[in-house]
Length: 493
Image (cartoon, rainbow, N blue to C red; front, side, top):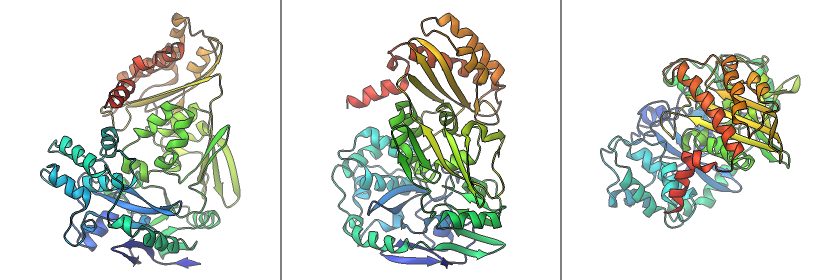
């Protein structure tokens, strides 16, 4: 069966919308169609957080709220969810606990960014652990810029509001909303439009493969954290959109003893725990992957499939030796992830073929993994360069290495010459590391752009390799880490 309208829950009742343009954003729907102006437009690229709303999605039998950047989310992507904006929080003139705390703690200055901040804190109010620590508040607000520099009272308001378990109207009617969202999940394909212009959301992989084969010129959308900018910044006319968010099974994550299998539509937030269990460095890379809003929307498969040279996941997954599974109507095939990237924005993907899942090997007892992200600011920033390193050891000798960088070339790329130079090198002979450090110049002719110069990238690549070797050679890892000092300070709160 195929339906011709998206369905979502708002204001305690179901809403159906049909006949919208496929590139309509949620923010445009709210401001231009609904005339609800509480949700603001700031950067229009998912960085400032002024446009933040919350989406409630059914997970494990309950409604789970996540903050979302409405400016880059396509309207069709709210299908099957509950939409919550700042206008929806107050009940009969009584402020929501988060809003009340913001007033009491003087957390609102000019007010432009405040609605988005309130919605980020609304999600923390419902999903955060109790008691909420200041570090958790800072992480929740990493995607919300306050240009009045009023972060301390905002954090104080969050700590006050989120001290107790949720007791608002949304918690009271959660059972009713969960039942409604369950009814929305009927397994039907969604197709809004016609053969020349449409927003589609197939419900199965068979439907997806058939639709993409019939329309290979359509744009596949995962979380829209990249495609959304095509609309807001590049003004690209997306006439055919296939959203993968309703495809059964594509969000699945399977945690086996030796591998972690991640469905293409699993969000970065959903994949965080499994990746962090492989190695803490991998968990920290994902934690610094944009903001909470970006991690809630952005998908593992989308980050790989868009082929960005500065995508954070591809280098670390390449270093771990991951495989990629692709599918089209003719069947599936698996390839090493490092062979998927051919040239800038060009991948080994056949017409009608889509990324299905990624298989990530876990570390063996004799393997060491390190990953580092270098940015201008610590949180929510695009990498100047990201280095990932896996060393296989026999005692104190490196028997093999896998090294990959993002931001150093037009694609996420392995350092084959450097890997070869590390074969047989002793961790106790720092002088012998020099050949490998020099080999990086053979592996990369770095990009030179507004994020970093080629000379800077060359220097930090050498430094990151030296850091990885130094940490592997010594147990004193914390001494080389900003994150280690930060964790110590947080533990002392």
